[in-house]
Image (cartoon, rainbow, N blue to C red; front, side):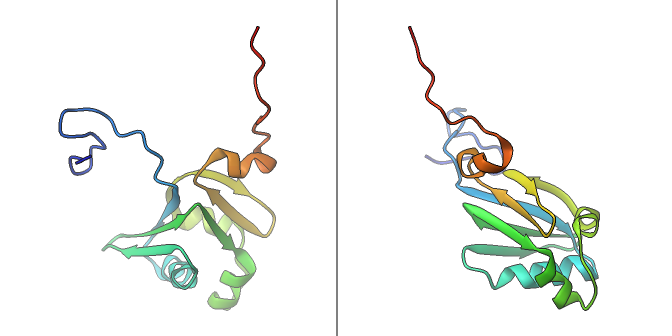
Length: 124
């Protein structure tokens, strides 16, 4: 299916609802955002795209920001508040834990964290 740039619609106006199987964030392009992107750049399945005022970090299926790893790269402590300060947008199911933030492309993969009910629905 051919899609129109930036619209998510096909040549005849049909919306492409196929899952991208990706999750990601947009970070501020500042000192901390750059270091976080550099840490993530070397992980398998992660793509980092730099723009003048922002940095996109996209991952296949799951994207995990380990605060200890990021803090080591920054040379100072890094926590949830620091992450939220540099993150402007995200897509995927976001789960905040004490020592990391994890984004999942599919809600089924995040089920154990977000109480997503995966039981089959019985019909009469």
